[in-house]
Length: 262
Image (cartoon, rainbow, N blue to C red; front, side, top):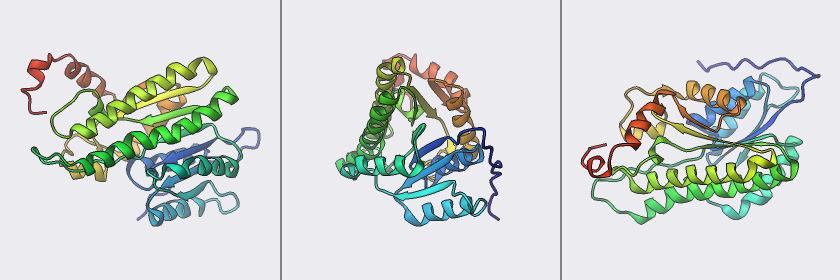
């Protein structure tokens, strides 16, 4: 049985907010589309997997056939040359834009003694360069408008260089720093930038890693992310307990940290 999303009735005195979710076909991205629609947003859902994307938008729009609330845009985030034109098309189709959320990410399994550049390059392209390509477009638009909100889904994996997957940790560390730089550049222009650092969230990516103990659902994560966004938070761990966990891990001396199997 499919989960039904409660979509609020039209409120003509309240302007409808518009958002782009990049990486919308599964996991946190899919849950974010559903959460935003339930809060009255009109959402452009961008993802590579066209069939999943179409099914998601069809399900949401079936509840409001008079006014589609979710628009599907198939796209591979590594096709960087497509992004400027697609971004403008989406903003025009939505009739404006207030929020962009970059959720797209890939985590390739890496053996303990494996150094596979193709895997590493793929993670950097999707997790970091794709984010820079999309969020850079939003930064230009929002800076000119003097308003707007950029949200990037980084990870606790970017807080330290753990042994498991060097390229993945590097991609998320790079995204965290990039978002901080955007925040420092854009805040005085009226643009908000929020960095989200999920811990364990029950998604296909986490199941692939084999570490599912203590994970929260993607729906719960999406709810916390949107709450943090709407409160104007800058950096948020999801769920919140990871703030304390990572505070401890960040302060473990390097000579000791490298001995730990984490």
